[in-house]
Amino acid sequence: MSISPLNYALWLAAPFFQLLILGFMVRRKLTAEFPFFFTYTVFQVLSVAVLFAIFHFAPSMYFYAYWTSSALGIMLAFAIIHEVFCYAIRPYVGLRDLGNLLFRWATFLLVLIGGMLAISAAGMNSKQLFLAIIDVERAVRLMQCGLLLFVFVCSSYLGLTWRNFASGIALGYGIFATTDLVMFSLHGQLGPSWNSTLGIITTSAYNLSVLTWFGYALMPESARQRVHAEVVYRPVFDRWNQAAMALVTPSPALVPGMSGQTYLTEIERTVENIMAQKSGPASNGYSEKEKNQKIG
Image (cartoon, rainbow, N blue to C red; front, side, top):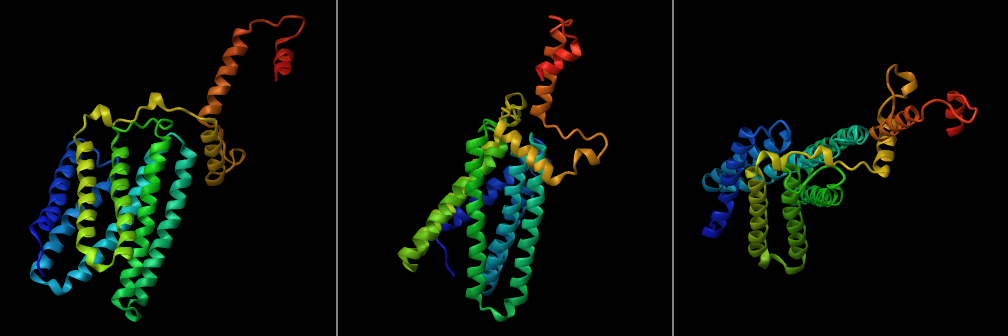
């Protein structure tokens, strides 16, 4: 097999910058915040090194090695979606816990599907297995686009700026996922003669995503921190949070010490108490207790 100098450059550029990303993540202690993204980056660097060696020394095995690597990368990308989503909704404990629950079930289904594919692989030819992996990959790409849209719409409510590293992860995946989906659609329309050109465009988009992550890793620490003071608590988010807490946590009446109140309702109760204290002694012939009952 032969490969052009341009393809070589695009192939090796991504792991070079990903090594730098790993260094900056360790140096700036981002590994604890985004462990799955760190693992994915390590995996991609090792994967390129192994595939590069197989391409030159065992080309007959390259097809199977590539799609094995692709399947593992898809699973890690799925975990990163959950990681960024949970980071984004961290102020809402109920929604985060519900997201964790749904992710565990989705992971179980993904493992189950993978196990069924592995069991039936003996009766499947390489083309059928290839199409199955492609279908799962397209689904993950759509989820990555949805993640970017979610961060774009809700970032101001959740205290995330576009300089936050989580936003950078979503932006990088959104760039690559959108390009990959478009190229896949064009591949079915243009035919095999365009495979090389479409492949170069897809690889270039991935390199652009890596450069995006690298740029975010270089940003100052203050630019990447969540702005807790700017979290805007909206009634609709609070209602969703309460509903999620009701789904994933026991009833407050059954657990001693559990208030079951959200951040917003606690603020409302504090304001009411302050207003009651400022109202002073009872007036107009009402006792303080009667006055409170009348206001309620």
